[in-house]
Length: 306
Image 1 (spheres, rainbow, N blue to C red):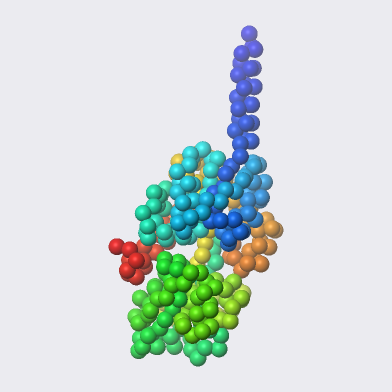
Image 2: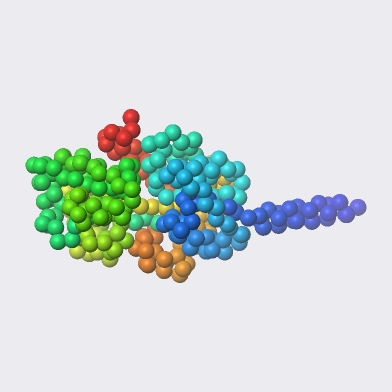
């Protein structure tokens, strides 16, 4: 008479084991070998180990990351699909183009990185500070480059131009490389990017767009010190389709935190000048919402959106 209950219990255990063993797909919205993909592939093993499940990466590139982000948003909220997304597809592109999702289309698992950007000029330039360029930009004209409309370099300079009242001209380029060539040739005066660009090109930093000076660059003042409370960084994080079970979200967030604390992830961060920053579900969601709103306002003032 006890056979049926025992059989049912065994069946439920088996189903639970199968569900636990199911593979989690991690969508990366850019092609293999790029910056986001490189970080995601170092993050994935630690995340999978902490989660106790197999995780595979699927690259879904195109349309500045929005195709992959849409694929992550449209997936089932069963925990079998997550997205490793950077700032662009989450907090910039939905204001620039007609996407099928917005910042509210996701549950936020955790933020993994945040890398502040610097105001850069050609090495040996005759301006000694942000104030020097502000004076020039108010009295004459300043030309700044970016790696494309709506990118962090563009947003940061647009915000500085607005705050300081600069007469600034924006020249977008197809990536950082061409912009660096333009700076070397005197075609542009200023550029904004991360420490990787600072370390690998003939440029120097006038300020960092961060609340405090960076430990690795103690002699570089903040924008706040120059009188402009501007904070811009390149960041990434792990998201899921809206509607993930709270217990699943919590376990994924714990695994995410464990992944960014691994030696492998920390070594990559040091090698690539990437800042590691953990924010849990609530804090990450609030951060993205605020960041998206801030970027939307800057884009509108820059005339890139209505």
